[in-house]
Image (cartoon, rainbow, N blue to C red; front, side, top):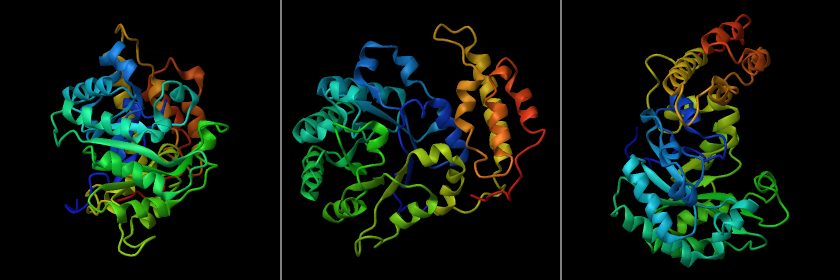
Length: 353
């Protein structure tokens, strides 16, 4: 990997109910260097819940970041210390989620109205991990909230938090409307303003600025990362992809070569090999957790994450239908895979990535 590139060069966004450890293991098979994020975990869940259940992950997932939701500095500090103990590579504070449930908890996007509080939270978390450079404290946020559409708002927000020691900002390039829009609509209706994110990098060249929002394919990632793409002499440090990475995951197989500048794999990666690896992983998880107090792993809850693997190929629909057939849920995944490949999706040329 080009040593000049940021570790945040290509990231998969934290997505509630999706980016669990099984999903992250799958994404790691596709890209050894992508930065992966957990689903948002609230501080209350970690302080009062089953820590092991929420914090455990596969060692293969590194680099992996824990995203936290909360607004109480002492609770966030406690959770940051737990993340350090568990070996996470980053702790990310959510200041961008607009859901009503999150707003009731007084965190997420509504924190953009309280930059000083966010700075206090960040400072408490940095102090909790002893300023450990191996566990950076980062912030994910929007460019504004509701009808506040001035660049000055997000500039001042970032400036205040940077003074508390935060050096990495992941910026969803849309406003968050706290009233009147669902979380889904908040990802689609407020207009994208990529120029705000590029302007942040120009105004804070010493900070790591990562763009999130509306990146539907690798071509758009390459475009936004190109030096001078929006502002002369400005180059963003990275991109974060959400739904597209989940629904069309094969795009990740190109990231190491396309975005990180790594040489092509000696042995080209194939979808079939990734599917076989996920089946082996699933059967291992089923055997490992059978009878555990926190519940047995069943293969549909793992395999659901790979249903976009053959997206766009002829035969992909039938393949998905087999893996989604609840009547097969009592079979071993390796046997279901045989059925799915009785008429397999048409094989494309394998990708060297």
